Image 1 (cartoon, rainbow, N blue to C red):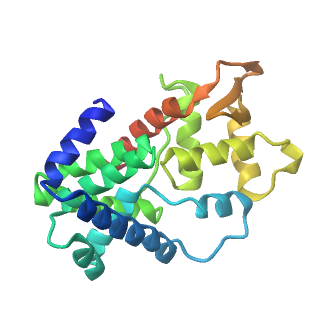
Image 2 (cartoon, one colour):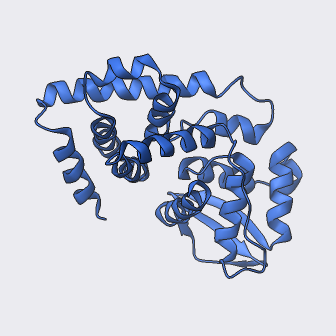
Length: 238
């Protein structure tokens, strides 16, 4: 679905809110979601890879769903009587306004599930588990038909316990450093990927340079990485 269609659909679900009030509601929701991450992420890790991921907010809609799953009273206050679907619609518009297409698409997928209250609540519970790294994760067999890069992104998601493209891009940037400079989980992850023939060479202008078995390939765009991660995420929470 085109981003313009997602925006139109979200605007319809929001209803006829005056623009000033809509922006105020959006700000209240985004502030609450970002505060939620600080509450659930725990103390700052010592490991360099974990610390880098710890500093990146997950998608706003995932944090919104965590608040739903926990029955947090603050969410009811922030919604001002709006439904969960309308709250997600507000977050879609907020993400679009901030230029975060990936966040808007993730929020849209969740919003559609709230056509059914039961389906929405089930999804919210799974996302709450996902945010805490509690969903079992199995990588496809190394000889399966998935492309090597798809498998590499799956392994990065498994290691970081995150499926958002912002976290993946940071991890790939860290992996592009000299192998001798890597420590802890970053070194373990780098060695695992290199055993598959994958090496990340750098991140430039939202494009990731990488090689497969020593041959540099065409750079991977952030959007391409996001699409792969959306598929990997869907498999994990299906």
